[in-house]
Amino acid sequence: ILSYPRYLNPLKVEGKAKLVKRLQDVFAMLDSMVMCKFTGFALFQTLEYEPKFYARLLTTATGFYFDDEEFLRTGERIYNLERLFNVREGLDYRWDRLPARFLEIPLPDGPAKGETLQLEPLLQEYYRIRGWDFSGRPTDAKLMELGILTEPRWPKLQVALDLRDLEEALRIGEAAYRGGAEWVEAGTPLIKSVGMEAVRRLKERLPSATIVADLKTLDTGWLETEIAAQAGADIVCISGLAHNNTVVDAVGCARKYGVKIMADLIEVKNPVERALELEKLGVDYICAHTGIDVQRDKAEEIDRKVELLSKLASLVKVPVAAAGGIRADTARRIVEAGVKILVIGGAITRASNPEAATRKILEAISGVKSF
Image 1 (cartoon, rainbow, N blue to C red):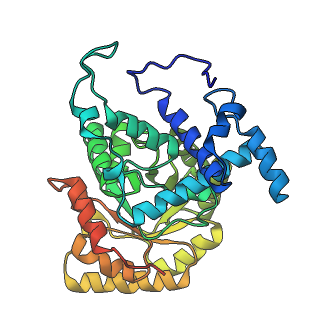
Image 2 (image 1 turned 135 degrees about the vertical axis):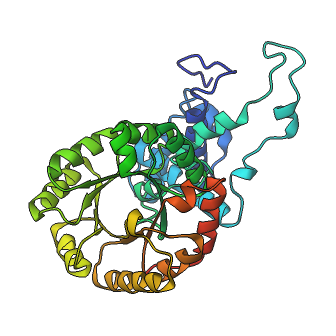
């Protein structure tokens, strides 16, 4: 009864999370059907928990057609909705725990003598297979895949890794992601330093994060977008100064590979006019950007930035991003102006504790809706 076609090592991580997810998705459906789980001993053939008989029962009872795939997908949808309710009520990864004796007291005898349960790697593998982030929160990509969301939850925090060293960038990027930054950017200096390896390594390290490749493309729009997309980028940044043909090529390539294009307005003389043009050309995001070399902390500079951002957000339909000199004490005003994506570099990358700095910024914009 309930065999499994291949051996699973009890002391290894590999393979276990997949089985747990499958079991949970199937049992979520059985709970919704108000069916006893013990029927599984008669209807399941292996630990793959084949749902075909339950799918037929559900089809017969409801008149809605369910095959195995739709049955499992519906169970996954239920499980993710339950998780969202729990996260909202504060029941996050800190509650994904077992009794202390399993984690701290070695087994006294048997084949696993001296072993304790290594929960963290098991959890991270489980979160990865679920499409959740490091903290066990369902990602927007997973929720949109399941039809729970129709668009991302705004605002988003994007950490800009404008660094030279890849290992340092990976460390800070992971810390920021753990702190809640769902978008992680391979900054222009980092890409110039190590090339597309930055994008590849970030995607490997943070598979559930949205990876942004800040190329600031001015020419060869198709080629550069293709290179970034093939390396694992989810969003490719091009320059708003680029010729319209370059923009159209970048957008066309992005559609082919299923990625998005963000147009950067840095040094564009008439940002509002150009933003409207770029939107018509098909870009997915518009970024109002104050360059690192020209950033100022003066109050009047912030006022001017907020005024421009508010105007952009009211005129274009695509999400507006803001970049350049944003800190925890200015982030809220910028989001209130209608910005949906906060691009923050130095306030996180130069912090002694990037994870804590990220959380501080997110706390500052907590509860603010970006319209």
